[in-house]
Length: 117
Image (cartoon, rainbow, N blue to C red; front, side):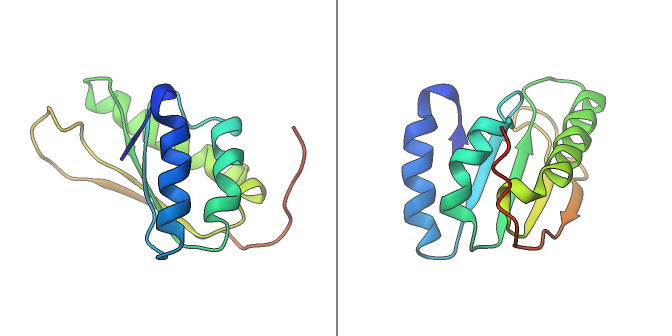
């Protein structure tokens, strides 16, 4: 499922439904992994292990790697906001030739909610 500004509400509803089955897979496009969207998803996924598939719309592989590292670092720095176990995986854009994927295993301990803005 691709999360975009237009489908954000649908994404939240879908995640809530999937969370009940303990299967949650999110695709967050470039520029959407921000504090507001992740905090809004927090309650839906807090109790589950989640896979974030980070796919960049930018064509260059270097840009994708940068996106993946940036998102992985952001998630690590803000793990208190999410409070769940996450594995962030960077994939090539579907329009590009297939190649190696870069995986960022991030295991977050559930705990403090972190209500800072």
